[in-house]
Image 1 (tube, rainbow, N blue to C red):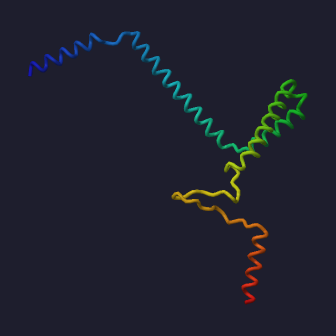
Image 2: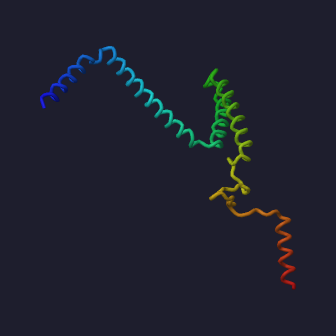
Image 3: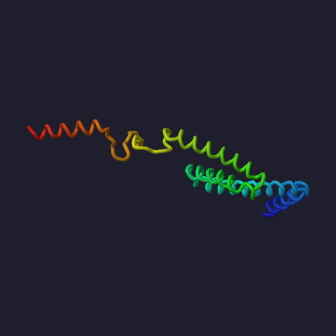
Length: 148
């Protein structure tokens, strides 16, 4: 029993000899501070990204159009800033219009021809859209079947 107690006392005394220096404690506190700061910045970035994710392209298009109109009508009140707002509005308008036009085929616009997969098989969503010629043919075949 006393042998075990002596070993524990020696271990405690060895640990006291290897006590951290003030420099290492400051370095550890600095690391902890920067880790907390990075976590706070990351959390704010995630919150901002989720807020920006709620804005649709059509809303961006509307905002850019309002920026262009506002910079033209408020030219005297805004001064030289109106030119920069006009340029930013035009760039935003052209970019959002291009995204709106070119993203339709990639699933962003939906549409009647879009399909989804379920359990490895393709399923159609929505009602099938037949061409007018196919509907006319189906109507004609139905009339012929009734006559017989």
